[in-house]
Amino acid sequence: MENSTTYQKWLAQSRKGYLELCVLLVLRQKKSSYGLEVLQTLERAGLSINEGTLYPLLNRMFKNGWLTSQWVTPSDGGHPRRHYELSEEGLVLLPQMIDTYKNNQESLEILKELK
Amino acid sequence: MNNDQFIAAFKKALAGLDKSSQKDIVQEIKSHAAESGDPLFERFGSPEDLARQYLDGEKIAVPLGEKIWGISKKLFIGIGMAAVALAIVVSIIVWWWTRDPFNYADESAEELGVNKAAWQSFAWSDDLHLDVERASVVIYWHDELLVRSNCKIQDPPKVEGAKVSITRGKCLVYLPKVVTQITAEQAEIVLVRPQVSLDMEIKQTELRVAANGERYRYIIDGSRTKIDDLPSHEDAALELRIKSSETRISAYSY
Image 1 (spheres, helix red, strand yellow):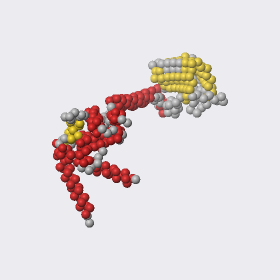
Image 2 (cartoon, helix red, strand yellow; image 1 turned 180 degrees about the horizontal axis):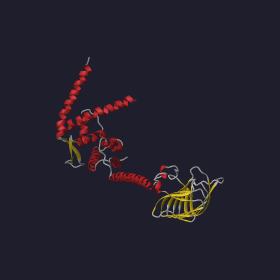
Image 3 (cartoon, one colour; image 1 turned 90 degrees about the vertical axis):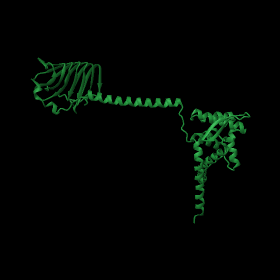
Image 4 (cartoon, chains in turn red, green; image 1 turned 30 degrees about the vertical axis):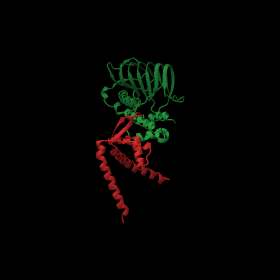
């Protein structure tokens, strides 16, 4: 039971950074997007994430200065949506994050094959 | 819990965040609810848990009321501590200023023997009447037939027949062991281990007795007289008969 709890913690920690990277990738691709659309995009990519995780994550990334946001009312009417875009800082960080993940992946592969 | 209730509870749980962030966050959740059509509680769980996710790592703004209360509390505690410290300092100063500079009950104290030139002596063998008026007098007894006095006083003690008068001053006095009557008005008197029985008539006076281990029988006829810590022993050989008014009588303590 305890192992399961610590595993959940580890999972949450390792997932947080990974999800941030994924959100940055979605926004680089879409230029501008809002919560529900980001969520659907991630789900289509096979990443299961619930709303209660995504929205606070977007807010934290915005607070960190990696994203900018503005309220956009759809042209066909409806509720205004909070649209996010990569900030300049986010644009600079994204390639570095990708490199870090790649390097980590390579290290993992090496370690797995270690004799 | 419907969406309105969810939003109300969510807003409340976000109260620590700055207003602008709160507004954006709540609006975004409302927008999500409107677009997805899903009940918020189903999608997000409890509003408090959701708010906790937002508040994680945030600097929480303390509400103005709490801020004022916090500052006031610190201020009151500060003022209170300063007042207590001041009271202690004042008490120490008052105690230092008003304390007896000398232990009059110490009959063998060096101060009683030095500066002999300052002592006045009168030969005495009869009954004695000591009259003290508006003066502070410490009275000791000795084996010699002398009345000796050492005074800080403008006029030295006056002798008229059997009466010695001390007025307006401070004196240390040695009395012979003869029949003695003491009268006093507006005076402070310390009796140090009286060696004879005494008849006293005192008014508006503070009388303190340093028994120094001796036992006395007190016969006090007092009006408006306060008596503190003065044990009377019926079998004592020496009697202190005191008629007093507006007076305080107590044991001497240094």
